[in-house]
Length: 257
Image 1 (cartoon, rainbow, N blue to C red):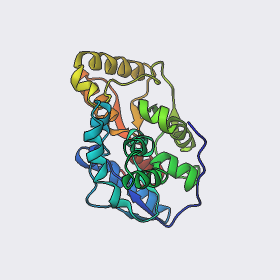
Image 2: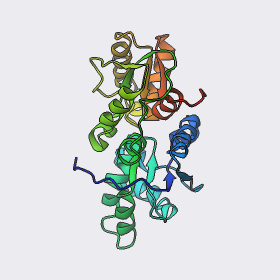
Image 3: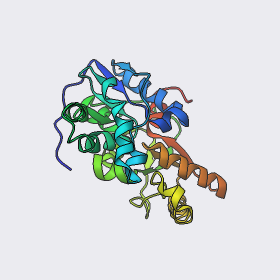
């Protein structure tokens, strides 16, 4: 992953909420907006946005992924950063959209320019806004484990941003577990095509996280959160899950959802 140059803090940004946030975890999107607005930014949310095309792309259907992504290109016309509360979706937009349209003389330059403005939320808070939560009021002490999706970890370096943010929060103790670097078994359509393998993978992830004694798992990727959270609930495992945006908002002085 190449070293990235970060611009000064802007006055305005776009939020690309992702389809999973929109449909299943809307609170994470609202809390992402609150975090950005608290830093003085105006947040724009284009109503026509939908999916980044990752499910089709990772299933080997680039034509379908291109069709989905094409509908998004014109929605972010202003030269503002595009903040995404999902490392895997941000990685799709930043790294794979330019490849999808590499042979298109019109959409290709659009996708490449837009990709350069895409930031995962944790990355944007740390590297562009340079937030400092060290002086935030400390609620009751809390021990957590961090989960970073495979794509977010490898394409966007999101684990490093999550670690830095969690470790800076007063009253929060982050512990690592044996299977932290492993896939949770979601993998987009992988969990639908290979449910038995996916189920075994998420069971290992939950057991490893629970072995630390932590009762909360924090992640910046909703697909992983839904997979881990639902599996933990079915097993009766003492493990709550929370999106990074909601956790940061709650632990840095915002009101609990």
